[in-house]
Image (cartoon, rainbow over the protein chains, first blue to last red):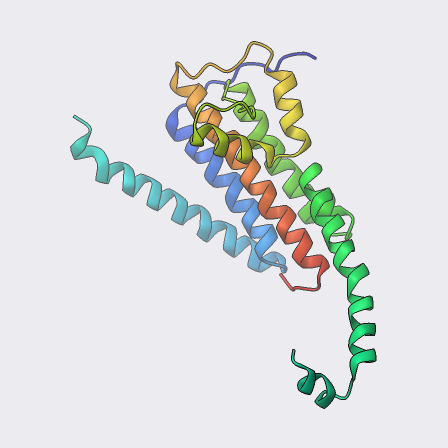
Amino acid sequence: MTALPSLELTHFQTFLLFAVVISIAFGFLGRRRPKDRVKYIVWSLLLFLLVGIGIGWAMFPFSR
Amino acid sequence: MDEQSQFSSGGGPEAAATAADEKTPAESRAMIFGVAGWLLPGLGHALQLMWGRALIVFLAVGLLAGAGTSMKGNVFTRDGNDAFDKLGFIADLGTGSFYLLARALEKDGADVSHADGDYGTRLLATAGVLNLLAALHAYEAARGRKA
């Protein structure tokens, strides 16, 4: 079987991929109506980004 | 349910037995949908004609597992050295058939000496846990639980 092409992502890009994919999957699994799904996906994505970047900044003083 | 409440609900032992007999096929059907969803991401929903959810689960799990494999993440085997390896194996196994695909595609083995490989390991585990959650959702939906 042919090997997959090598993929190189930064920490932030990987985090973004995770946040987008999980938000969409949770939105579709957790809500039934399209409007509710969109609302859920946007909120979930914003909270993922906010919490992820917030934790990153909170750890900054201990990084050196 | 105790004996007294069975009688007071207008049934009786025969009615309770009939209800249990009717419940069993539905329960096994739900179990089949759950296992199908685990083996092939999205199949549990597709069998219940939930096409949107089936497609999203398949794409989400496939994308995460594919990205994790491309980044040379660690695809754990059952011969783990410690508890974390064993937990990683359980998480990876959650992707069902994609686990075998990832093993087949990662011919040269994992490379976690770079950060990319480490991110890949996490993405593979995320794909597995997401698929287990989706399979559980398919099982619950088949049991008549609204979502």
